[in-house]
Length: 74
Image (cartoon, rainbow, N blue to C red; front, side):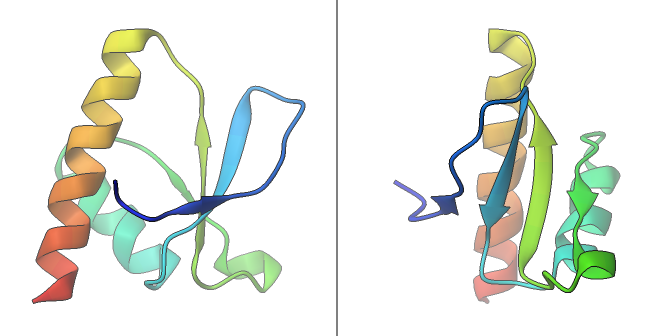
């Protein structure tokens, strides 16, 4: 639904290409109480890394990310 590309993983986290500056998304998510990791330090400016959580945590992340992306599109 959000058209986000994720890279294949065999770990408990995902690397997601979000189309916006990772630091900006990190800060917006943090204001919503959701912690992600911006990947700018690795030269991946439009990526964030997320850890897989419990279903309710994952849903909270998705809801917050949807809000952030909608806010950034404006």
